[in-house]
Length: 165
Image 1 (cartoon, rainbow, N blue to C red):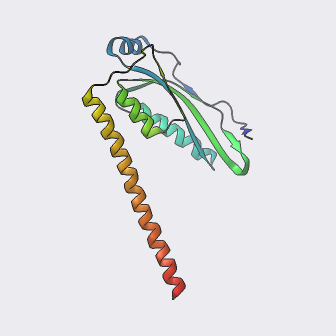
Image 2 (image 1 turned 180 degrees about the horizontal axis):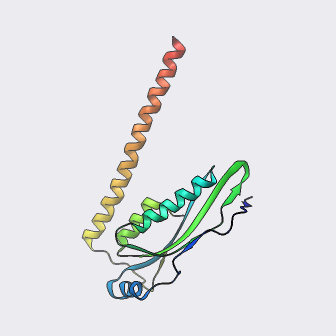
Image 3 (image 1 turned 45 degrees about the vertical axis):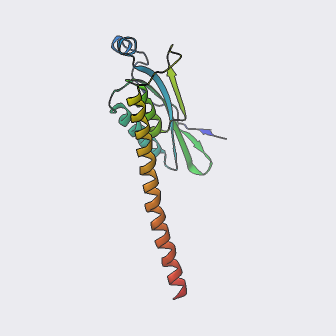
């Protein structure tokens, strides 16, 4: 069971409301209004907090993403000095491809699209670009796993050589 942190409620950025410019982009240019919840966990309260703030800052610098609200929850402390912190972030973005990009890179635990639209239409070229982005990310992750597996194999073979000597 989580034990509430004694820290005050985290900081809020933005007014939490769409501006007229945001509304124009949504209504006239077809941008998406969306919200995500990102959670960071770790064994250092400071690291959890700074990591989550860094993720939100990075999201705000993404191309064609405009954050209009962030609401940090209180840091939760669990047994054995384990901490968790969540942020609810609301933003608008240009197209569905950006939403997929955000889902892949930020791994939110919740992702909502606030829209009256019932369907999302994607041009073939945009759909192909989304699939290429997904493929590239999976390829980078697979490459990192391959490199780490090589390091593990070298360490294990070094241990076996030391034991046999």
